[in-house]
Image (cartoon, rainbow, N blue to C red; front, side, top):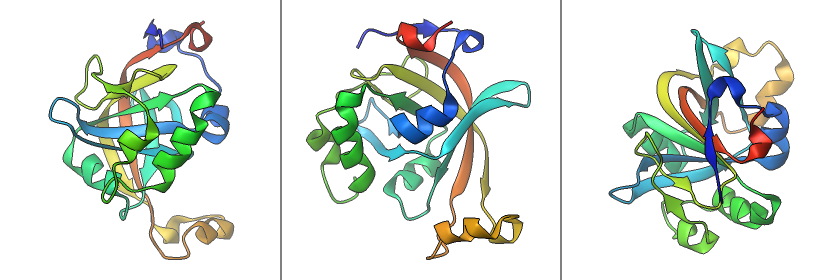
Length: 175
């Protein structure tokens, strides 16, 4: 997919649609050594914190990607055209711990421009982030009691904030 660098202040998207409808592929690790894992996510946010553009993602501790998020200081988020939805379904439902899900998906990982984690040739949007903060969700802090329904096994997410270092995408993501 032909992408170009988009200055963060010119990056445009509808964040709720990006997460809810399009989904994103979260990838963490080291492309050069082939030591990375990915998972499809539909929860997260984009914005500004501490005077920096950021992406916030959540990962449950039992996910294989969690190990990579703990080990590496960066991650990527990639969005794909609708025809890649079956690949995203596969990558969100199978574990890389006990399968070759990346090969099965048909997606092509490639070097990112700044970080060690890969992005994907087929992506129409690639966001490269450096982790700057994490926090475990605590049920005592849920102000809406219905949130707890998302955690019947008490497997609360870890929240990661990543400073957005660079964005590349198609014209649809630029002013």
